[in-house]
Image 1 (cartoon, protein in one colour):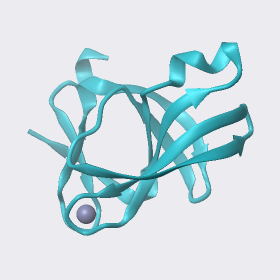
Image 2: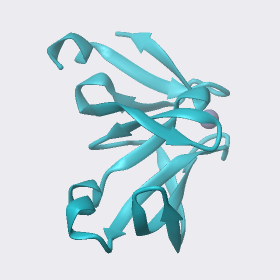
Image 3: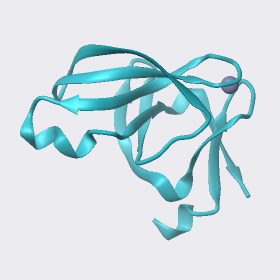
Image 4: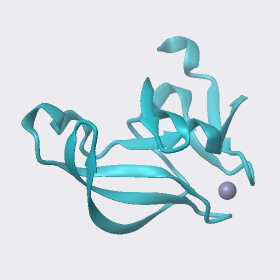
Length: 105
Ligand SMILES: [Zn+2]
């Protein structure tokens, strides 16, 4: 993933930097709006209330994540996985591709 380390993913609406290419784990996730990325870390976000969400891969406790500047919903954070095989997602962030732009440092 070294080729991504000089990229930053920013909010499409306000250009608030949200995640580093170095923290990008997967591009093969799906959200309501289409493609979504899995990141190990995100910044400049605000977490919404905890909720249980039934996703394609099982039941999770999640929190929606919002841009800290414009407030737009970006995706969600996995707080808890109820399926042992999904535990690796805990503490990680899904950000919808449609909500971000890729920028080079
Ligand atoms: Zn924003």
